[in-house]
Length: 219
Image 1: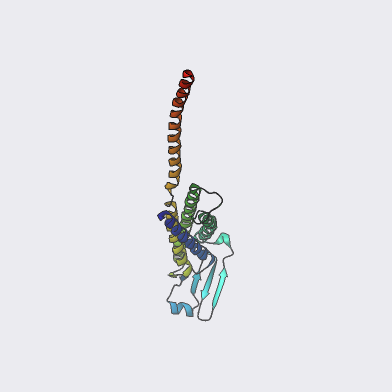
Image 2: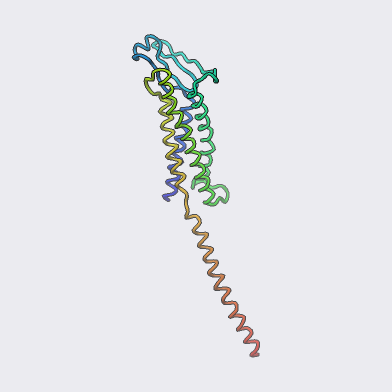
């Protein structure tokens, strides 16, 4: 029962974490940059919101975004952020499917518990990899943006990426620790009983055979 609860909590955390990683990947409100104060930057139209895909200029009467189309001319931190966040989002899908198939409430044919445990562990490993893929960009991107242009604040997308990373990491570790070793105990118990009965059954056969020969000789 405790193992099932741990597995369910790990699945929920991992799914929510993967959703946070997908949200961070698909949105652009990562950091807000400005060299001066907020009011001065808005008057000068220099308040900028930046993400992996586009850069936006924010002012009192303007919100204009320009997409990053020159891939080879982008800084290394933006290219790395794109690659790792896309990789983490893609890897999260088979991980969620594996975890869903390993739930105790879902049965696929005559699945053994050991097969479900293997799927849960594999899904947990994939979720840890997703967390590592999201951890590097969510740390490197604000550092690179701050070095390029003064960083003012973090955006919603970056917070979503941090929360998703933590949830994926916790959920993956919980799933890797939820392997149930009690599934093999009934098998060993049956093997012991089989050995016991075969041993005693085999020991009684010679006695029965000797009694039969004795009666035949007497007759």
